[in-house]
Image (tube, rainbow, N blue to C red; front, side, top):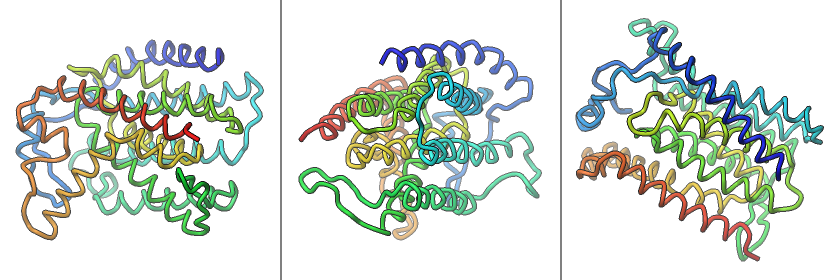
Length: 337
């Protein structure tokens, strides 16, 4: 356990030191949000979002780039330093999902640096979904073919063998959490703080359940330190945002961590706030698509609360408290016999 705590401290310290010049670098290359109207997946303007967030124009994004790079390097370094016996396929699927979805987000972020050049940069929503599906299918294939996952642990039933359906199930979990994280990352400190709470719960699971690969705990610890350092600069009023690079990479990391532990019901509860966020957004999308009207004034949930008059820090703090409660309930479910 001392090694795990030491890795959190080390990664926090290294990331914190690097973030200061990194923010200056993002300003220099003008990797920052421009003051312009945003659009939803139906290419419709979002005046409520623009009104509530227009003051954030000029804040750099791209914090996720540093998180992905530092976490990946430190994780591989720690595996060698502590001579951890790792399962190569578990390590591969963990880092592949983290880096792969991070690169997809980076590609999408890059279009903000080359506005007007649509020949190569910039992905439409359907293109991003297709690539997400492809990445998720590759990851799911590894789970089924090389890791032998074909079951879901359900309280009261035990290990439920779902066979080939696990492939579809795992892909669905990954895509859901990647998009849930991306949707939640709309307020200063919201997604990063919730992510730390979720990963703290999974760190407890990796340390408290025998038989789990120690390499997963090392990865979680290093990632927590990096995200903790980022959060220092991301709380209201943020000096730095994750960008799509960070939101997609962290969403994938959360999903794959849950899958590797085998605690899928616990994952759904520990990440409960993310589930509420993506659920509120999905309901709104379906309402627009089939009913041709909004079910409520604004979505996702955090934007609706802002619209109702809640100040941004109030929304974030209460979301963190709700996330902490969900994490405790999820841990209870994970350990109950």
